[in-house]
Image (cartoon, rainbow, N blue to C red):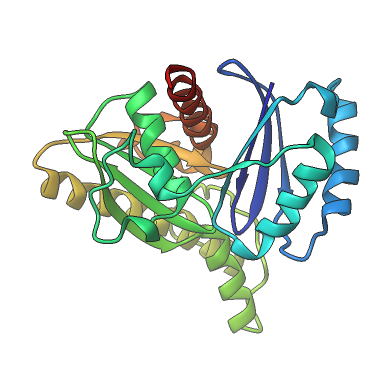
Length: 261
């Protein structure tokens, strides 16, 4: 089985993959100071509670946008699985995906995995709206190339910023409001964080479509994808495991290449 790891700024996702099937998936909060031993203790417990063992893992693939955490995660992998993980870089992806941006090495590997998953499971042109620490719009053009996109502040980042910067504003959860005009502070904040981001999503997608010259297929992913997809008809589908699907596809392509060599 394959252990696929997607290390982001907010969460680290661990998924056990059998073939192309995600057997189980866990999200833990990102912490660049978490040690290899702490990862081992936490993951062993999660494996056992879902009926898996470390011995079942034959390969590990890692996408990370948190360089400070990589050493601890790699040490955990070596210690618990007796192997090194395949650490995704743009040059490893380039043989399988056209990366048509100014500096391919600067592209977040999660964005590249989203684009690779699009070309495997969906159609181009496409836009992935990824709700993470930032709200990313990852664009795949009609030729199947990852051609860049848009990065905006993430929803939870905005929640934290409002709470931190304004003493009288409470920290709230993301709940779709019944109406746009809030009659109290909490409802007004919820309206801004929900309908304000719906406006951001719709306006950005409209301009991307104009620049592409045609309407792209739109996939939403990330923890808040379903909530925001319910508020607009511009999102065609929600796929919460899209990044993992990209990792699985890359692993399969690399295995095919090694077998053919």
